[in-house]
Amino acid sequence: MTRHTGLKAGFLVTACAGALSLSACGSPAVSTPPPERTTAALATPTSAASAVPSAVQPLAAAGTAVAVLAQLPVKGRAPKTGYDRALFGQAWADVDHNGCDTRNDVLNRDLTATTFKPGTAHCLVLTGTLQDPYSGTAIPFNRGPQSADIQIDHVVALSDAWQTGAQQLDMLRRTAFANDPLNLLAVDGDLNTQKSDSDAASWLPPNKSYRCAYVARQVAVKSAYGLWVTPAEHDAIASLLQTCPGEPLPSAGRRP
Image (cartoon, rainbow, N blue to C red; front, top):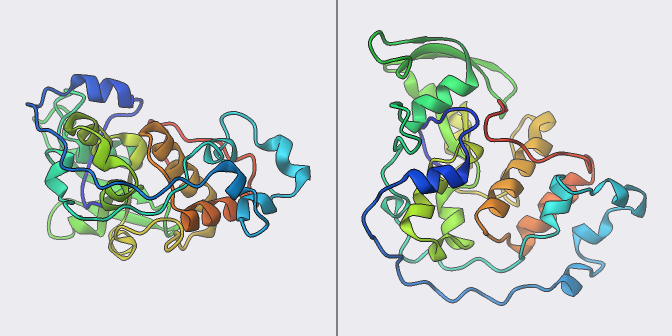
């Protein structure tokens, strides 16, 4: 979870990684991850995934969160040792080279009725209104002392990513991850702080109508970057998706 961000609709993760031109930074030493839980282990009666009624199994078609969740590796959490925000590159870098930083790109995407600072080529968002997906309420945005009322959330928090596979990514890929619009949402600042670096096993948005879309986005991000889910995280997501087995994966450019 991070506070501020921005990226234009439709920006692709692969393009983001290719556009970066950082110097060789080398990945830090990688802790050996715990053993992967096999498919057979997932099929035990205690697993939430196995509790999905057979009647809804046909709905787990390609492109749904249920289907992609079933493809994610399930492992224990790796140590947080060595984690630092700087290992995910410059905060809110202009990775798509459109002249706007990531934070303002996301504000521009997620807010309505936006106004911009003159002379910034519609980059610096001054005002707007957020229909907050986490609380379900409308929040006004006014740049200044109250800017923190709306923050940019890493849906899969950077610390969580570090402990579920991002240690093994190089600096370019981690910078892409930190600035990928698929993984970024403008949200209520207090709820973003409350969430911190929690995964779906320990935090879900208070707005219950958004929970399926929220975990589907987490699944999409983890799949895109080759990250794994912990057993508790997997089962929490699988249990929730039983209520919405046809939930599709989101696109980066779609408003939440």
